[in-house]
Structures are given as structure tokens and as C-alpha cells.
Image (cartoon, rainbow, N blue to C red; front, side, top):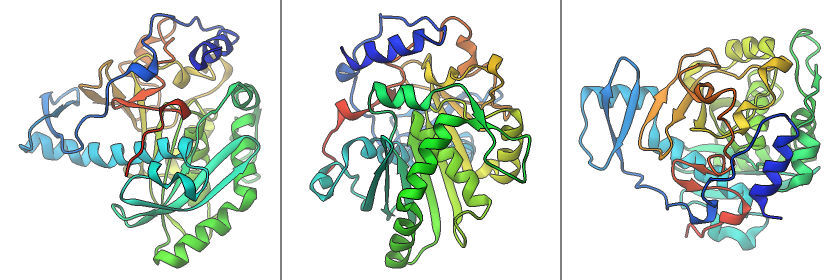
Length: 325
């Protein structure tokens, strides 16, 4: 069964109907230029349009402060790399600015650690769901409280189990080795799909000194599901500055709508919402559930698997591994 059909069947179990009309991800267009600049047609609504010129303006300067397109594209490439890199033999899949120093796997998950010369930080990239087993094991719709000092904060148990399995598989040691080699203790974290939930949990842990001595440079997620309850939203917002976090969504991608709000889940802040063909994006409000962004397709139209596998016109997943060097 095709990957999209498997994912569709799984999400049908959650009560969300899935459209079968999406174009297959492998036929999607190639990435746009990384040199795109930004202009705006409607400043008040914070809707920004990638431009094919290098022209800048006051609005463009404001856009790059609010949302750095090129930086985010680089984080997306690192997120995609986690689907394709398992050993040094896969170096061709690593972006030119990055060096992978460790690839850890546990409980069906994978995380890459390395150095990114473009940000001069240690990067941590969590792979998204690789197969039906990962989805079944990680989307259980049950909450757990892993924070003794925050008794009201709850997160989805499957995502927490996946993240802690990778953390306990030697993540701290891998980060320490990269940090020692490259002389920085600043971390940039990314992930797509369920990998985004792990990236969110790790960013929260960094601010809570679970990784002593390290600082959070930035966390970027793509198509992340909801990670925890409204109390987690509050705690995450208090711990992770809005200047250090971006949660990217794409049109009718179904995954950001799981687990559902009616089950007591709430997205973390700083959503940036791309339209269908990724020709424009909206910088959403800080509520985590902006009705003008990804939630605008709720409750019956957020059904696309293919939108989940295409971000910023970059095809994602293990079926879309493309050499970067």
C-alpha cells in the first residue's frame, strides 16, 4: 500500500476524512531559490510573499525580523536529511553547510546531531514518522505528565516516549561530542511531522536545564502535531521565547490537527502558515490556534497527506531523498 494511503487510513481512524485528490508527493515541484527576498501586499495581516528578486524594502526588513525564510529553508533541509541519513555512507544527503557527527536510532525513531556552519551551532534534527508502525506507536491520544514540578502540564504519551527513548539512547553524549569538536554550546533544533513534536519537547527540556550548560538558539518544526495541553502551551511559551521558535504549517496538512483540541490538546506558539502553493505565508498570532491560519480549514477540510509531505516546495519523507552534494 502506498505511504499516502497508509497515512490516510490511519487518520481516518481519528475521525478525520481524507481527500484522495492530492497529487502524489513524488511528482511535486522542486525547491525554490534560497535567495528569495520578501515583499508584502498586506502589512496589517502580516502576509508575506517570497520574491524572485533580491530587492529589499522596509516591509521586507520587517518580514525578515519576524520570519527568516532562508534560515527556515535551511532547517527544513536538515529535517529532511534525517529521513535519508543513517550512516556516513549517506553523506550526499547532508546539506552543504552541515556535518553530521552522530545518528541515533531507538524505538523506531531517529535523530541526527552535527554542526551547521551557517548558524555556527550544533544542530539536532528529529526524523518524522517512517512507517505505519511509528504512527500507531506515537499517536495514541493519551496524555502523560513527565514534569514533577509542573503537575498540570501534560503531553501526548507516544511522542514523549519516542523523544525520551532517543534522549536516553545517547543524545546528550552525542551533543557533548559535537560541542567539544566545534566549540559551541548553542543548539538549533528541528523536525518534521512527529519529529517536530520531539523537537518541541527537546527545546522545552533545554530551557529547563535537562541539557546543562547548553542554550537554545532556535527551534523550528514543520507539520508538527499538537504536543500537549493548554498548560503545556503556557509553560512552553514562558520557557521558550517567541523569538526562538517557529512552527511552520502548510495549507490543509492534516497532521497539525492531531490530536484534536476536543481531546484537550493545544498547539504551541509562533505558527507561520503557508498557502497551497507556498507563494505566500502568514505570520499568525501567538495563540497557537489562530483561526486565520492552519485552523482555517478546520473542521472538515484539513485532510491532506500530500500537503504534509511538501513544505516550502520541498518534498519530504524517505521517498524523497535527493543528494545535496
